[in-house]
Length: 446
Image 1 (cartoon, rainbow, N blue to C red):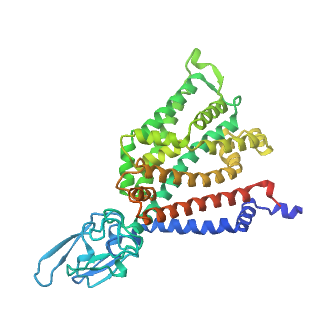
Image 2 (image 1 turned 180 degrees about the vertical axis):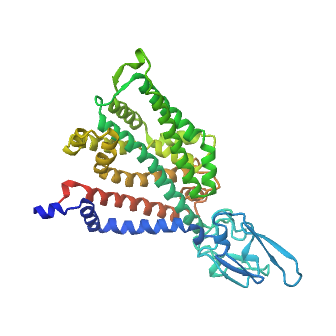
Image 3 (image 1 turned 120 degrees about the horizontal axis):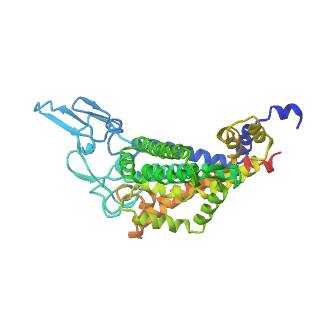
């Protein structure tokens, strides 16, 4: 490579070109984008409320109007009797109204609402029934058939798959977000400082440890119910509540770390070398010595309440070790390079050296680990839901659909469709992870 080519070389551009050469990884990326779009639009793709309806001369947009407030109400006037009719959108059976015009969602069923006329495991090709606005029970028209069948109480499997996509991707991404935050933080500190580089007073050392323990308690354990209620209200509220918990955690740690800066005479004021690398490495070894899935199942089983927040936190705090090890290994190598030594010589703080210089150059292997970790988290969530100790019973996930199939072996659609969805999603993330590994590996650079 010439000097001009070296000067214009961008590793990001090079890595993207290498990634595009992997056809399987690119195809998997397109599938992942499609799954994300399905998860984002699930409320409009599978819903028993119409997207548009005109009833008694008045126009409604039920699916859109209930997106932020499910209990919204409206009223319309009967032109014959002159009486006003109150409509609460979430409990109104829109299929039984004499609608003047209507646009239904592609799948006109919600995942948690049963169809009383198609109970007891109705298959995709079985005879299905529908109650029309006249009150007659007729054969279900193609528009209102359950194309992937129903479960024991008549819930639509296709609708459950659509909304289960949102749950699975959310659990996978947010749980690995928690794991990545913990792993990158601890791994970077362990690799940058080692056992001999960080000096502190005993008092500050003890106060920081106390701050981490109390911060975790006040941020996550004491706010567990509030976070669970926020996620039940919607994804946006849940993510905001999770961010609040993270802010609380860091504020508590900062307060105790600041208190630790006070000069306490005597034994507590003695300078010591903090064995950051040994502490992090021993923590990694302890967690790795336990069967990860068994640990998650044990913690989930002993929790008083089941919620998606608890599940994400459990998966996150038990899955950070691989990311921490990758980050630590990269930082052990990077801290000896010239640009880090130059930053120290120029008097830059350790925080700036880590955040501005070391971290951007040490995250490439972490992205690969995160991609594989998301696939693993989705598989764990499906397994826990299958065993009945994952998300709450009223939340439909791919694992809960599989569990229903276990109760009725002849209902093959309850096993095949969710199983295929899990298989495709796990395969997609694994192929993307392999593509990232090949694209970011400097040994394969040509």
